[in-house]
Structure formats: structure tokens, C-alpha cells
Amino acid sequence: MKAIEITHYALTPCTRCVPRPSGHDVLVRVAAAGVNRPDLLQCQGLYPPPPGASDIPGLEIAGTVVGTGEAVTRWQPGDAVCALVSGGGYAEYCLADEALCLPLPQGLGFIEAAALPETYFTVWSNVFERGRLQAGETLLVHGGSSGIGTTALQMAKAFAAKVIVTVGSDQKAEFCLGLGADAAINYREHDFVAAIKTLTDGQGVNVILDIVGGDYFPRNINCLATDGRLLQIALQGGVESTINLLPIMLKRLTITGSTLRARKVAFKADIAHKLHTRVWPLLAAGTLKPIIHATFALEKAQDAHDLMASSQHRGKIVLEVI
Image 1 (cartoon, rainbow, N blue to C red):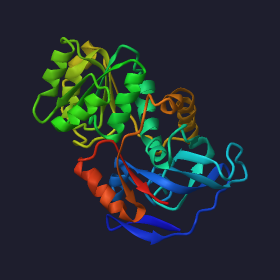
Image 2: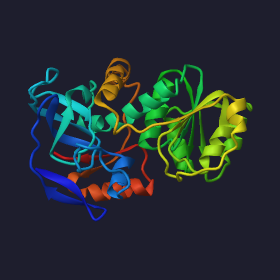
Image 3: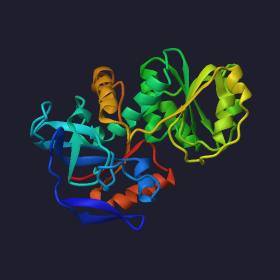
Image 4: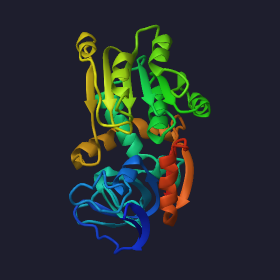
């Protein structure tokens, strides 16, 4: 099969053997694969795959089941699915655990479905479970025009929360406002801490979804309301920060972080079930929609990574495999 491997910190087309399904795995003929920041980190040698996972990058796929392991009961050849995987997505065929496969939402094709698993699993797990976002509360999303950002924005609005985003340009601000954001702050031109204080009448926001880290950490603490929750899911701005602990105590703040790739199948399967029950109907109804910025042929995966690294995209980048 055709695949993409990492060679000297770059993506290179290659030929690999088609994997064989066993146990609870299904073999998917991949039609499309989503591109995510962890793929870039893996290419840089900073995010190795967990033990037993494929060294081929790619954490989300959509395609057709063509084979099943002996213990599979949920799927059969011919079923169209999208799936969260621990690696192997940048290839013509990929193994996925049957519990981490979901049917394509009604009305969506393979390209759109390939943009769902990584971001929707991540947002549900962090914003709605760890962050306990409730209707009427306010969510601040850093990187609001990214794949994670556009997903968090839409999902929070669908569940009746208010959403403020930070973005790097006025064009991206307008884009996010068009998706339903209540406010968008261009962090290159405005101090987002001061802006949050103004927008919330000094109260602060209830939940923050942050992909930056670094010097954003103390600024996030200043943005949070009493009993606020900070969700750290990436560290694009650095891994170290200096903070004043007193506001954390006085405001009873909760600070948490997570990664998804290495979590056990049972944990991710629980998220899959909740997404299928509560979120897939919203996708079918058009209340939520994956935002696709660009698609690339599989052999152009390096170009897709270069675009993501430039941060010029809005929404998701997807590889067309078939």
C-alpha cells in the first residue's frame, strides 16, 4: 500500500505492507485522513507514537471497512466509518479499534468525516467532561480559527454556552464571528486579558481551552472567574511559566491538562459513545459542521504540514487518500 513515513524529520511517500486485523481491530480502506498538530510534533521527533502504534502519522481517518478481526461484532466489510486511531492514518489502509469507529453522520462525506474524530474527541473530553462547561457559562478558546477552535466554538454554542475566541488577525476574527462566536479578540492588536475583563464586566470567563501555554498561563489565571477551569491541551508557546498562586486559591480555580493519544481504548470508547449519542445528531442536523480549509493528495502530505505550521489555515486540513 501507499503510505507516508517520517524520514529525517520530513514526510516521504513510501510503500508498506497492508496491516492485518486481529482481535477487535477493523481494517479500513482510507478515503481521507485528517491532519493535526500532534502529527507535526511527531514529525519533529517530539511526540512519539505509544507502544504498539504504527509509526506512520495520522490520528483520524474515514473510509470503508474491508476486513475485521476475529472478535469484531460492530462492523462488517462495506461499512463506511470514521475513526480515531493512534497512528497509521497517512496510508491507503489503516487499523482501527472497532470501539473507536463511528458511522459517518448523515449528509457528510469521507473528507468531512475525516476531520471529526481527533478534534471532536478532544473537545468533548476536555471542555464538557474535564471542564464541565454548562449552558449559560462563558468559554474562552485560544486559537479560535484552528480545527480545535472551530470545533469547540460550535459545540459550546450548540450546548447554549457563550464563546469568546482569540485569533491572530481581523480576518480570522470575522471568520469566527461568522461561526457564532460572541466575541473575537485579535491578540496581536489587543491585550486579551483587558478585553476579557471588559467583555465580562470584570467577572471573567468560566472555562478556558488553551493550546498555547508559556506566558499565557498567568494571563489565563487573570481571565478566569471564581470557580473557573483552565484546560491545557497543547503548549505551542512553551512548557514553562511563572505564576502567582494566590489567585488560584482565592478564586478556587481548577487547572487541568490532558493528552488523548495514549489513553486506553475503554476511555476513548466512552467518549465515542457519548459523541454518537449527543453530538452526531447535531452534525446530521447541520447544527455543527466540520470546517475544511484545504485538502491535499496523500503524496503532498508535507505541503499539508507546511500549511498547518504557517497557521494560515482556518479549520481543518485533510489528506485525500483515494
